[in-house]
Image (cartoon, rainbow, N blue to C red):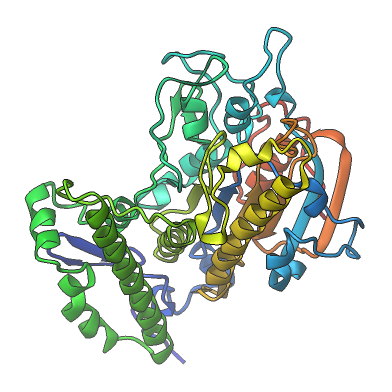
Amino acid sequence: MMIFRKAIPRRTFLRGVGASLALPLLDGMIPALASAREASIWQPKRLSIVYAANGMIMNKWTPAATGSAFEMTPILQPLTPFRDHLLVLTGLTHNEGRAHPDESTGDHARAGATYLTGVHPRKTEGADTRAATTADQIVAKAFADQTQLASLELCVDSPVLLGQCEAGYTCAYMNTISWSSPTTPVPMENRPRVVFEHLFGDSDSSEPSVRLRQIHADRSILDSVTDKVNRLMKELTPSDRTKLTEYVDAVRDVERRIQKAEQQTGQDLPTMERPSGVPARFDEHARLMYDLQVLAYQTDLTRVCTFMTGREFGGRTYNEIGIPEGHHTLTHHQYKQEKIDKVVRINIYQMTHFAYFLEKLRSTPDGDGSLFDHTVILYGGSLSDGNLHWHSNLPILLLGGGLKGGSHHLYPEDTPMTNLLLTMMDMLNVHVDQLGDSTGRLDIG
């Protein structure tokens, strides 16, 4: 039997006025006669790093038992549907996050700077910052020629604090956890509209008036390519039509929620000509940013996303769950149970939205599995006890990427966190000999 099916080009975009809708990976994009090895080339591997700031209440995070017999603790409870795909990693440390003999405080600045580097940052209040190239950016550079965007760096809190933030350390060390070189911090973006247009704006057009006319006319990205989508639907198999329909619905839902946020922001800030559209509530904001990451992976516009759910030293309040006090302030609880309980609620609240992200990845088809199956996912922070600023025994989770999960691993005291980062890069076929204070690979089997 001979098969003459012509595959749809992998890099297929439906272009409209000021818009460029990338398509997800469809079955019709894989050549009909591709061998299993050739088909695997079409299956991208991805990296997702989600950062939780200001530490955890560790006795509500860490399971009592190791191995497969561990029970889900209160903070981990939202991840129960993913227990069999989850690795809880205890004992990892950022030794370079600790203070040097000539330092006292500054733990939050060092926490952000060391998380993906394992390098002690230069103490400075000026522009002469120095850390190291982060693990996510090493992977992004390795994948850069395969995607339109090398990486996405996202956040929820404002990323534009300037000057000194803590004990002689510039705010640059807290505004991002990504560095493209030892002296170049990568800006994080917290505005959903900016991210959306970064993904779906027409990169072939350099004329800003085109985009402005589209916005002022209240036209959506999808409205400008509807006819092309409908024509393409007629050429697809039933399974590909289903995939494309679900994808288009997801894009429209994200765009609708961004427009709603812009309207609300415009009411609060009537002097702005173009509202930034940053939702006030953490749940609405975090879910938008998670959904944008899913769309970016689904269309293979990028394979590396780094997301800060909070900033070190950040004072975000969580009024939507009845917590008006700032997050960082509460973590310095001085062992007062009322404050500890509120921090636990914040930790669980953030984890609930991370679980939402995981479910979106798991429910999105991707090649021979789902986005969850093909994405290496790290969740955690660079402080354990926020009250004492401990850089040891960090709260770390690893999921996805075809891992055999369902286990709690306890490593020897002061095992470098960078050993895990090297192992994760190996899973993505990006191999480096050394990262920061690494001493080898980590056994996660």
